[in-house]
Every structure is written in C-alpha cells, then in structure tokens.
Image (tube, rainbow, N blue to C red; front, side, top):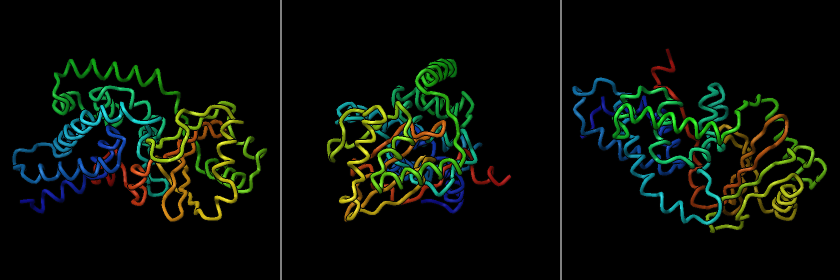
Length: 304
C-alpha cells in the first residue's frame, strides 16, 4: 500500500523523473507508463532504507526506461520512414530559463540521442543533463564506475560530433519569425516564405507509414517551400484549425480539424528557419493534448 509520504516524495520529483525518462525514450506516453510502473515499485519500498530519494528514484525510473528502450529497439529499426520523438507540449516558456534543459529536450538533440546505444543514452542524460554522480549512474545502468566513465566519454564524443552548436534564440525573435512564417504560409506568399528559410533548410516528416508524408528528408529552401505551400494551401485551411504552441521548447504549429493532422516544429538559427520537424504519425500525437512540466531539479531544489 502506498503511504502519504511515498506519494509526497514522488510528487516533488515527478517533473524531474518525467524529464529523465522522456530524454531516454523520446516518448511522452511511454514515459507516463514508466512513471506509473515505477511508482508502484516505489510504494513498496521501506523508506527507512532510502538515504537519497532523488538518486533512488532516478535510478529506479532509469532502469525501467532502459527496459522499454531495449524492448522497442527492433520496432524502431523496422519503422517506416524517419523516426522522430513524440512532441512534448510544454507550458509556454517552460524550459526557456534553463538553457541546458532547453537544448536537452530539443528535437535536434533527441534525434542525436537516438543514434546512441541504450546505455550510452541513459548515461549521457544522467551525467551531462542532470549531473548525477558516476556511482549513482553505475547503479542505475548495472555497470561499474570505470565502465560508466568510459561510456560517458564515448557518448559525449558521439553527441559532440553529431550535434551542431546550440544557440538559444530570444523569445522576441522566435515570435517574430513564427508570425511571419504563419502569415506567409496562410496567404501563399512564396517570396515571403523563401525569405524566412535558410538555404539548406530541412524538412523531416515522421508518419510511420500511417499518414501522408515524405519518406526521406527534403533539403533546400525551394523544395521545402513547395512542401509548405502544398500543406498550407488555402483550400485545405478552410477545414483546418491552426494553433501555435510550445513543443520541446520550440515554436510549433498544431493542425487539426475533425482529427489532429500533425504537429510541425520550427528550428530557428541566425534569423532563419533551419529545420521543420513534421510529426504526422497519429500514434505520436496523443500526448499533445496535455501540457507537461519538465525540470532538472526537484521542486524543493527549485524553490531554494
């Protein structure tokens, strides 16, 4: 049976624990399941044996997340078209005050983390994002401390090689570019659209074979503009609702009518849109209805 103290400790840490699991899995719905299963295990723990609740629960959810990640590895290998993380709907500006957190939940970073092995991903997240000690990470992943240090080094080098430098964009610039993009797309202003796109802008669409979408990334301003003109053509917008939201600490557009059609995230750098992440797989759109709170700290740590 769960006690009030079990529930209180878990609730204080829930945003932190959710963030850890989401960064390991790239799925909000799977993260919810992991937290639910972890809480059931936590409820059976004798609290007098727990010296550090934060480390204990972080280790618990990491082990559960790794089990899910390893089980789903084959499913991802057989995935139709590009694989993107589930969009994470945030309360407005939820992560903006924490640059490291903002980068760690970005689509670009999560796509890079997908190239790591399960152990590398978990170790990188726990060490580089959340700053856990190597001994705690070793317990979580079932390795020795020296082995974890090697994994951490390897993962850090892989991420550095595959992830371009993260430059936070101020809120005013993000809002201006997003508004200009929405206006150009809605009115069919091709020249206005092209002026907002970086020359090597990329369009990556995830449909899982369950919706209409390009099976390979589209690269180049003119080609991406053509995709956007088709997607936002006026006759389609008559029956669609377009809502601007914050997903993964980036501006995003939610398109829906009778059903949700997709979530489209914009990546902005140097005053231009550099990447569109188009999530069309209906299975990955279920979590977008619920805003999430993420954090690198326990609630009590944030308030001190």
